[in-house]
Length: 162
Image (cartoon, rainbow, N blue to C red; front, top):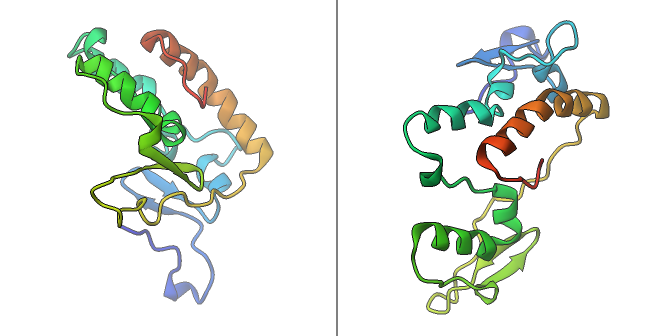
């Protein structure tokens, strides 16, 4: 569901905030992720969705670490076959995927399907990311750094986004 960013009653003036299911959306990314004091707004779902350690710990209450495989999405985008080879090994199935089965399209690798020469990459993927203010970016890195370090230790896995 798209969130409205304009209110016709404001005669073209942008609403300061929109609240939707725990998300606070302001007129910029920076204003959305910071509270009124300029600190990371830990209550905003925009921030909470990045607390991967919480999700992993909840999962590990139900299954053992040996039965959990976490895939690095950045690595999957850049080296799909490498990640798929890890999945094959994890599942104990025979090796199938090779680098030759993928072609580079922009910054993504897409599967080459011989039986479907008309197949192509997903449309609409790879949107350009807006630049984030360097001060806000540093605050976010500082905020997530200890959590990501704990995630790395919990999973014994390094991620491309560190």
